[in-house]
Image 1 (cartoon, one colour):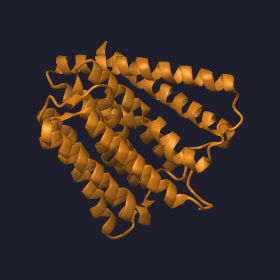
Image 2 (spheres, helix red, strand yellow):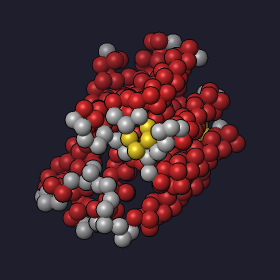
Image 3 (tube, one colour):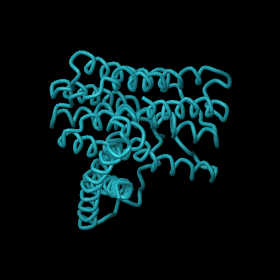
Image 4 (tube, one colour):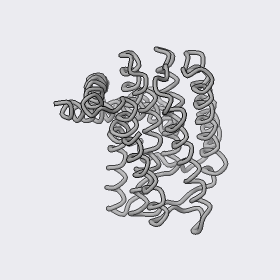
Length: 315
């Protein structure tokens, strides 16, 4: 029954997240927000909503390790699972912004996140404000950088949503909100029960099962695109997702409820794995064939991820 609850939670989160993205984009068009701004801000925040709601639900219920593990595990899965599996099928190119903007900023966010946990074993509301402020600075830099460019990758912003009626937007918002709420409740309750049944901590379940579940929609979309010979994934989008997970999910959750670290392993093991994966993709980007991640590099990403999953359950 616990597994069914988790699966229902995943399904509701996927549906809720999809309708929230649709309604947010359609509403942004009605407010005459440019497509570029929608892609950089509205879509990024909306796609982080499932992780945000799950982390908030867990923190309010006293399972703060799920809040932290959800973010750390998702960031690891974005690189180890999504990037690793996808690049085994099709190679992706790496642009200049990866080296001089996105990757350094991801490391800054990871370092600040680690420092906040290290100094007090808690993410306070004040520290959450700092993370959110850093996120808005990052968004400001992105918007300034692309302003005036005639071509920007906005595949996730469909022009078909431009003419959606206000009534349909409202219905989509309701579906999205209900899906995210019930999905987060079912997922957190199911994850806690499974952890108790298996005799492992909520932390282990959150950095593995919960994190993989929230990464499955992005992985599935990438694989479908790769098999069709279309653009499968953007490394910049994955890095941006990791930045948003720390800045918005941890930032907003800590404003509502300070996130107390219950398991020291999050600090001494999990975040270090997250940072290690960040340095791994930098190393692979510099190896031949440079500025590209292809099949053999994909295996060099997915194998450490499998090791991470196995060691997590043995810890």
